[in-house]
Image (tube, rainbow, N blue to C red; front, side, top):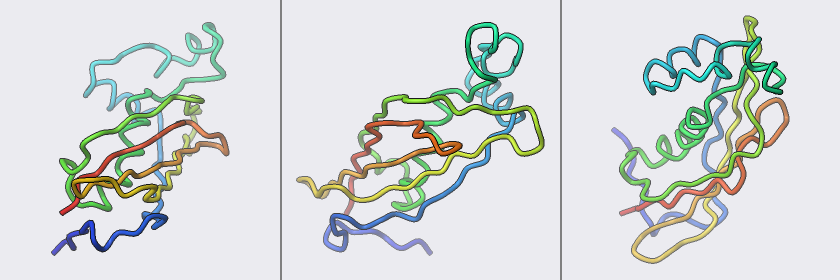
Length: 142
């Protein structure tokens, strides 16, 4: 049974469990099918390079979705996330090999707000580069 996280029990500065998410070309094809975003920069290496990218890159919304999983796994209810925003700072480059790429995500409670809400700040990196900036979520607790 999941533990309910309450506003009273949360302290500013508490770190959420960090997670690492693998990303392969197959993952990108699956996401393209689910989202309808078949932009060739997400699956065609030749096209991606021709438009100035180093290789195929992950969808921005995919990267954003993977990052917020750290928060939804912590709180136990995706509907508890009442606000979420990021700035895209670098793309997640996904090579065509057996390894692909990884998105590493950490997060911490940055502020206690009114009405039993907290702000969680996230840090998402890939290959040592920060890929999301100003990544913040507001979470409604009980």
